[in-house]
Image 1 (cartoon, rainbow, N blue to C red):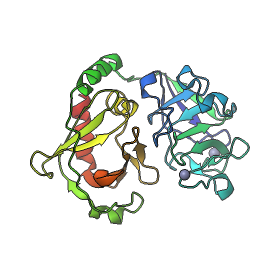
Image 2 (cartoon, rainbow, N blue to C red; image 1 turned 45 degrees about the horizontal axis):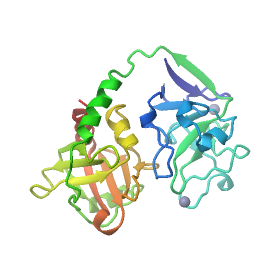
Image 3 (tube, protein in one colour; image 1 turned 90 degrees about the horizontal axis):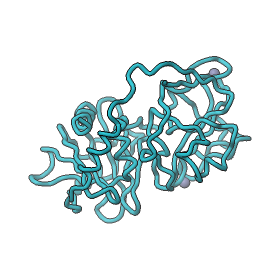
Amino acid sequence: MRSRFCCPRCGEALTPWVRELELAEAVNLQESNTWVLPSGWFVRRDSELLAGSAFTYGPANHPWVFAPMTNWWLRVHSDPLRTVGCCGLACFGPERPNLVCACGEEVGLGYCDCIGPYWYALHESVVHEQEVDAAPPQAIAERLTRLRERVARPIVRAGYAPGGRQPLHHDPSSWREALRLGEVRVDCGGGIEDPALVIASQQLPAGAQLVVPLPWCQLVRLVVLEEQPWAETESPLTWQHGNGPAVCVSRHSRQVLLTTWGPGDASWAVTIEARAWAEAWARFAG
Ligand SMILES: [Zn+2]
Ligand SMILES: [Zn+2]
C-alpha cells in the first residue's frame, strides 16, 4: 500500500504519495545534521524503528513521522515564537504547532534546528488516504547485499579539495563561485562503519576524486531506496557522519549545489548539472 496525508479542514494533500518504511538501516536517530528518514517514506511514531528515540517519548498526538518537506506541501507557521531556533526551524512542543496547511490549519510539528536529527510530524487529525501501490520498490534485499559488497572496498581518503568560497544554498546567484562539474560518476567505499562517496569527473584534475563521507543510513537511502539525491534550496538534503564534514545538497533550476563544511580543506563546493547527477545515481543504483 501507499499513503498520503490530507488536511482535515480543506482536504488538500499535505504530503506526496509515500510508503511506510520497514528498512531499519535507512533510519537515523543520531544527532548528526541528518534527516531521520529518507524523503518519500513515513513511519508511525510508535514503530519499532524509532524505539528508544525522542519520538517514543514525544508528542503522542503527532503519530506520523517524515523527513522535512518543502513548503509546496507544508508551510512554516507565521508566528516566530513557534519557529525561530538558533539556526533552523525550532519546535516548542505539541501546544505550539509550527507547520500549517496552505489554508492555515495547524497540522504538524517540524524540527530542523542545530544538529538534528531533522524531522516533520503530522497531527492525528490529518486524513490518512491509502491505495494499492502499483509499483512497489523491487529487490531491496538484493540491492542492500550488493551495496554492502561495494562499500567494503577500500578508498583513498585524501580526496581532492576544489576549495573556493562557500556559496549559499538559498542564494543561487552565489553558486557560480563553485567549481562546475559536467558528467560525474558516483561510487562508494570505505566500509559500513566509515563510508564515503567517491565522485569522479573530467572537470577534476587527472586522477583526482571528490571524497564525501556519509552515514551508512544515508548511503542506503540514496542507493537502495533511490531517494532523490537533492532537496530544494529552502531546506537542502543534509547529512554528517561522526566528525566528518557537514554536507548539503540542493537543487535550483537545472543545477545541483553540493557543499561540504568541515575542518581544514574539508570545506568546498561544486555544482553539477541536475540531469547528470540524477543519472550518475541511477547508474550507481543500477
Ligand atoms: Zn487545509
Ligand atoms: Zn541551532
